[in-house]
Length: 493
Image 1 (cartoon, rainbow, N blue to C red):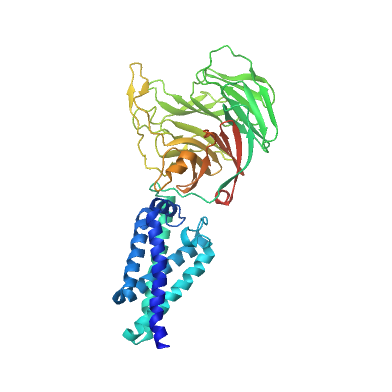
Image 2 (image 1 turned 60 degrees about the vertical axis):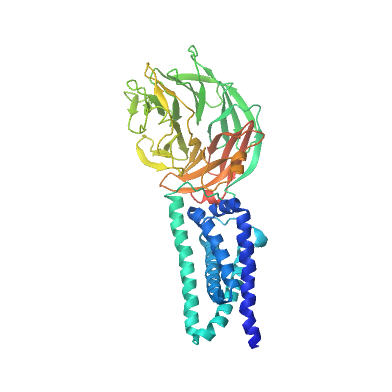
């Protein structure tokens, strides 16, 4: 019996040697993938870079200590500490994480998180038993061994909990450009083949999605939300004598709106009725417009004096009809390209949102275009990285290809879905070649929710997106795709 007690710590030690050798070496051999996986941890994302090295070094150091008789006891104490850390991590994953990620790979890839928890508990028992047997000839009193094992367990658990709480704050509010990819936040459930790839989203109502066409600008295509029935109708304005450059349509039930912006005219017609009459002429030139209701519009236009972009409101029932809001867009360089962005409305909400193209900020406004919040995306581009020159006529020209930060955006209620053009830390280059990434943010406070991929197909990537309460609709090439939103997204509404 005495001989068995003497050999048990050695047996347990070599169990740990095998475990940590395999774990450490497999991480080294596939280090980039290990960093990417750790970066997607729902608890420790913010510290993935540091932890990826610390875990490997710790595991191999423990192996060395366990193989040397004089340091075996210290090795077992460290083994106990790291196994307690792993166990607390799994407990937090299962009970306090925003989502439960896929299980780790390697020798344990067939085990789920609950099985991992049991596996770890068995190895904690091995470590404690080995420590107890080795420590008793030295300590004589059992309570001292218990105090030391409990103390190292508490410290290990506290470190993981502290990292978790700190990481959550960093990732959601003070992000250093580390994305957290949610587990199946959207599920592709229906696809409709379109006759060409030149469509864009014009709007929606309770039963239909409306598409405008870049090549047939006077045609509105309506698709039912089940993506089974398709209809078209042509718009016939009451006055189409001007030269138009960029005709667009928008739908705000029960009306559709037909406009250009390079010509200061807006037409309006009833959905399904081809006839559209002029409701605004000569009131304002604009580069972007969002329909708020049948009389009110949010515009992006240019000031006459400085030729800089500004937001404005157009109210057909007021005098004057147009009100410039020069303080909403904040100039950094030229007041044109540096404030370029996309003005959208939030579905099922009165909020208006302006997302800058070349910097990490979006502006949340009420329906009067009064700024409610200036919030940041997770990339670190605070100042637009562009080079421009002013021409003799006061216009500005881009000198070099700019670095785009945000490309497309859609909003519903208190969430913003933003297609980013920049790769974050610890992300897979292969995934970025195959897909576009969508980041999700709250609009009622500074909080990053998470990200997901929309994969390319046959060389085509997403060209437009639209969000509703249950679905995210995407245009990709000649396809209209409906993605069902799942719990990681829905619980944020």
